[in-house]
Amino acid sequence: MADLAERDATRHRAQLVRAVARDGRAITLTIDGREVAATEDDSVLATILTHGPRLRHLEFGGEPRAGFCLMGACQDCWVWTAQGERLRACTTPVRAGMALLTLPPAFAAPGPFATP
Amino acid sequence: MTRIVIVGAGPAGINAAETLLAHGRQPILLDEGRQAGGQGYRKPSPGLRLDMNALMGSEASKYQALHERFESLRGQIDYRPGTLVWGIDGKTLHLQQDGRATTLDYDALVIATGAMDRIAPMPGWTLPGVFGLGGAQVALKDQGCFIGRRVAFLGSSPLLALAARQYRALGAEVVVIADTTPFVRKLAALPALLNSPRTLLRGLAYLGGAMRAGVPVLHGVTPLAVAGDGHVESLLIRDAKGRERRFACDAVALGYGLKPETQLAELAGAQLAYDEAFRLWLPQADADGRAGDGLYLAGDGMTIGGADAAEASGALAAHALLADLGIPSDAAAVAALRRRASRLRAFQRGLSQAFAWPVAQIRALPDDVTLCRCEKVSLGEIRQAMAQELGPTEVNRVKAMTRCGMGRCQGRICGPALQEIVAGVGNIAGAEAGRLRMQAPIKPVALAAAKAGAS
Ligand SMILES: Cc1cc2nc3c(=O)[nH]c(=O)nc-3n(C[C@H](O)[C@H](O)[C@H](O)COP(=O)(O)OP(=O)(O)OC[C@H]3O[C@@H](n4cnc5c(N)ncnc54)[C@H](O)[C@@H]3O)c2cc1C
Ligand code: FES
Image (cartoon, rainbow over all chains, first blue to last red; front, side, top):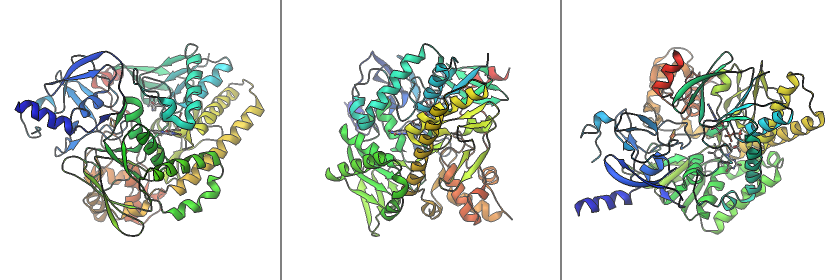
């Protein structure tokens, strides 16, 4: 129950809002270990930000960020995969089974910037 | 045979490719994006149920025409989507394609890399939920998403009204369209704007539509703060009458016109000069786009001119290239293209006055505002560093002292505002503040790719 309520609260604070639907293959992936649904050709950024309020934390001081330019110019949207790959979220499409991390793998265990 | 490479498959690059092909030359067309079309005519990613005709409004037929023309030529040229050009050495391009690094030699190069949002910082602009204005359009066109439920459009740009119209048409709530340029300055720019009355009327129609729908449309505002706890909750501005007004919202689209992506032109050897009207460093080229030996520039990446000018200048650059190869082309057509490009660019110069870059507002920003969002450098740190220096200071020196502009975006976001701060503190002209120098890779390259390139 608590988990469900927390999910709802998180969804409520999603930054991006879907305006039009996408036809395509439904896939699942994880964001910080949480399983989410997406459609093929959704971007990593759109997937993370339609499920939550932020994308990553700044390397300098850890403040939350959610990307900025959305066109591959500002580089403020790099996230990680559990395999240690780095991805530019606004220009990378999601793949089935991706394990996305909004914190660097080293921090994924509760650490200095861990999300509450 | 001469190898011709075009970088950028927007309206400029596509028109260059089409003109070359019509004269029996098959260019290689590279674009970082997965689909052709560039920024203004960006195609939705596959499967989105987006009605592009409704979204593009009066520009729908041009959008359709460009994509149809591209489809009919793509089989006849060597088109390589998903290919980033991240460096240039002599006449060799450094590419990254599908995470692999390769090189490509060229004899002639057409650079049509387009533009991005020009940003002025403000208190709170690094909060999640503040996005670039063009980015707000990209979210919609590329991903079918709004940047928030209740969106404020702030800055100074004709794209404010355009993007707000697109958001409203698809059901988002637009809480305010707030333009920093006073209305009288827009009137003063009217003569130049009459160079393209159709575009002018279209802009007015968008604003009229927003006002009829009850959206506050404000001119001459001073941005005070984006406020919120970990995400955007409101926008605070001072209106032209001096009243503070707060608009509850969960996203802000921020933009002050466009800024050419000039990094590749610089690496390819183009000269850059400071343009007083735009207050930007622009690569120099002749009227047809010649910028060096075998180097041609076109579209918004050369100077902001809009989509129609990009189409004309792409064709012009191709004609110049053909002429330099000794291939005769149609003189009357070239003359008509030149007239068209120069008229449209004059219109954009008018726009740059009607939608002004807010120099005084930037210089008046408080010390605690973040200027460099990559490395989190504040305006105060810039001012302090400059106060410690003896003698004249320019932007590269300030960059070395403070790390502002040294981050992963290479000054794409903070550069124009840094220029104004340095010129303001040093009490020197914009041009004297210098120009942030570019280095390869112009965008971060995955480690594996950079290594392969070095070996
Ligand atoms: C986000 C955004 C939204 C806009 N929306 C509108 C609009 O709605 N209506 C309007 O009239 N105008 C709009 N504009 C203005 C628009 O820029 C021009 O009208 C037009 O797109 C310019 O055409 P272009 O061919 O010069 O460049 P672009 O259309 O920008 O095309 C440039 C292309 O070059 C590619 N590229 C850039 N650098 C590299 C590199 N290093 N390696 C490989 N490829 C690269 C890019 O991926 C892009 O596809 C918008 C601009 C932006 C930035
Ligand atoms: S949001 Fe700017 S590069 Fe992705």
